[in-house]
Image (tube, rainbow, N blue to C red; front, side):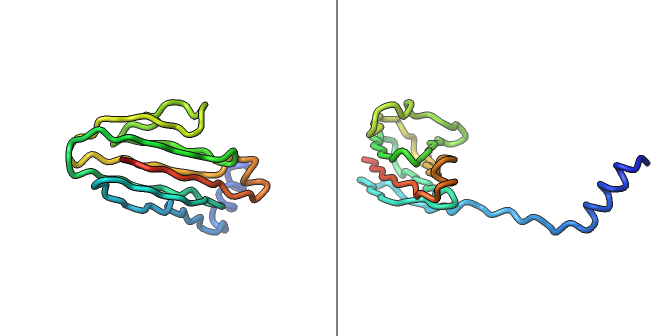
Length: 124
């Protein structure tokens, strides 16, 4: 083995284990409407929205300049229009037991400046 491999093996042997933190995930059930206002500082905030019926869902998402957000439907990420106009408004057809995950996090400059990411969303 080369000297580099021995050094790497030694470093790995004495290194502290790295623990991963899961994102907080709040679960909401959409019956008639949902309105949420929040902020993210240091970690991302995620919301899982489930439906009990087939219906068209109207989304309205407002984020400030310190925010980045993604929307996932089942296994598909970024199904929403681009965030060029605030509020971001669109509709989507949901099936029975369909779920969506909305995630909000700070942009890198906001994280470096310790500025919280402010957001709100409503579903009807």
